[in-house]
Length: 155
Image 1 (cartoon, one colour):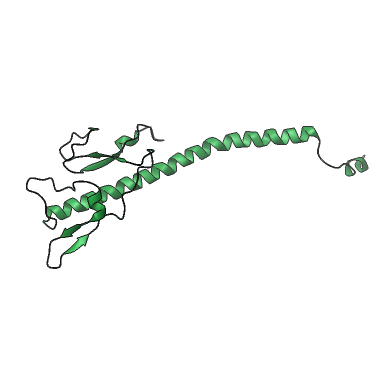
Image 2 (cartoon, helix red, strand yellow):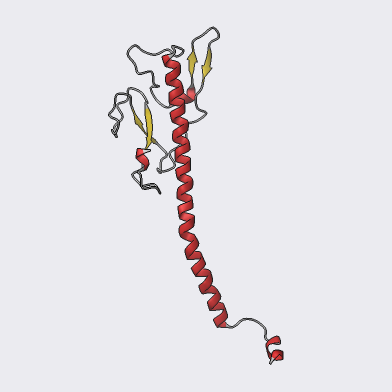
């Protein structure tokens, strides 16, 4: 009986089918996990990019309040657009120099075009329309929900 099994070459059709079914079940279980992982990676990138831009806006505002950045009278002290943070501004002082706040404007990972929604200091807090006076805050234009149930536009 043992000798008969030793001489057999290859696998039977049933053994191949069982192996394919097991691999299919494993693949179907892994696919949703990889989708959740991809979404989590984008959420982490969104949080990092929002933090980076908001920190640059706050630094700009701090320097404007200290009088190191020249501003128009009765302005909020925030930059006119996001490009100002990349181009930089000339700081006043004993040794004037150009201060850049960002190397580049990070993109919004949740939207196809990567563009941010902008809010002015004079806009309503939940407004989707930018007044254009300055850039007080940025938000994601995505209307999708995050893994925690909140909306990306509210972050």
